Amino acid sequence: MKFNPLRYTGMQYRRCGASGLKLPAISLGLWHNFGDVDDEKVYRKTLHSAFDAGITHFDLANNYGPPPGTAETNFGRILHADFKQRRDELIISTKAGYTMWDGPYGDWGSKKYLVSSLDQSLKRMKLEYVDIFYHHRPDPETPLEETMTALDLIVRQGKALYVGISNYRREEAAKAFKILKKLGTPCLIHQPKYSMFERWVEDGLLDLLEKDGVGCIPFSPLAQGLLTSKYLKGIPKNSRAAKKHGFLKKEQITEHRLRQVQQLHTLAVERGQSLAQMALAWILKDARITSVLVGASSSAQLLDSVGCLENSTFSTDELTQIAHILKER
Ligand SMILES: NC(=O)c1ccc[n+]([C@@H]2O[C@H](COP(=O)([O-])OP(=O)(O)OC[C@H]3O[C@@H](n4cnc5c(N)ncnc54)[C@H](OP(=O)(O)O)[C@@H]3O)[C@@H](O)[C@H]2O)c1
Image 1 (tube, rainbow, N blue to C red):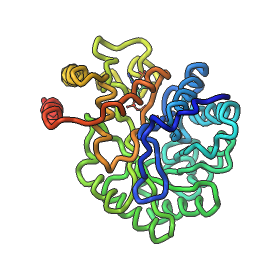
Image 2 (cartoon, rainbow, N blue to C red; image 1 turned 60 degrees about the vertical axis):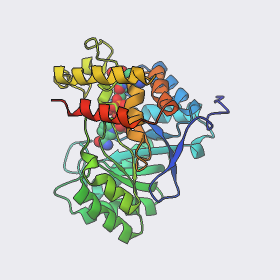
Image 3 (cartoon, rainbow, N blue to C red; image 1 turned 90 degrees about the horizontal axis):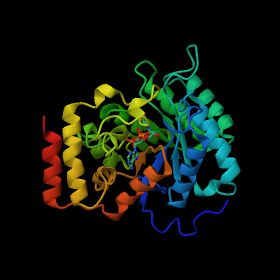
Image 4 (cartoon, protein in one colour; image 1 turned 180 degrees about the horizontal axis):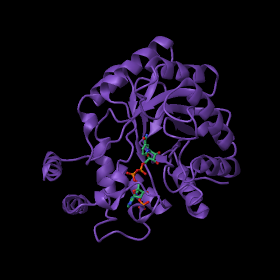
């Protein structure tokens, strides 16, 4: 398979916290669009286009599909067929933390679950190790020490190079960082939900990450497609909101949201970019953000998103207009 020899010239690579690792400003997530319900021809092309555009980071989890596990199986198959000899150019992550199998050991944050789940993920992807292994969500019942010790163990076993946490609020993240540091496996990265429509990370989490030298890779930066021009004229048939297994629900596409989306779209057009591009650039303007983790149901969408790097600065007036739109009730 021949890839674009200039793929590393157009992408920005940003240091992940205080670590030695750099990630592309745009990373691709395989939550939707890469399962057995999806079209292999389409997602294969999306993976090729991503790599050709300089995207070196692909994010998975044990439960991505549907059915759960199939995104890893499909990714592994394409990786071994089309990306031979490219493993060392890639950062592949996976996670465990949500329901994966029946019984008491297939969910949450015990050492038993995390170690078994990563073993299963490695088999599905036919990999010897992943670059980043995440605890996917905090577990209110398992001692944090046990979950963090499991992450440390996995690194010592050589099954992951780095570890991260996802969906942890500021206080619990601070405790996790402390434990990991003491164990000698510092937390590489935090993966929180963050977009123009969901801004809780601005309330202390980003400050903590900066202080502790931990990177940040926001997920759903396009609010699952709401922050694009996709829903301006209703709900298209081929959209996440129209799919039975889609996590974007029709009830989330309210008149209020659509009014905001329309105004943001007008501003994006004035800036000479798509709304998706403006929404991504708006997140990347903060130097504490390592990478934005986008999804894409086609290679055209992904390339549109990568185009955000061509116009990523904002005037004070534009930022004021955006703040005003986002405050509207
Ligand atoms: N840690 C966690 O708990 C967690 C949770 C959720 C996600 N994630 C990670 O974050 C990744 C991204 O999440 P996400 O898929 O919700 O991200 P997103 O980028 O907010 O949404 C992706 C969806 O937006 C639409 N889209 C993307 N680019 C577009 C463009 N340029 N123009 C028009 N529409 C566009 C597509 O919708 P259509 O499919 O409708 O075309 C696409 O499927 C996931 O794959 C996963 O790796 C992590």
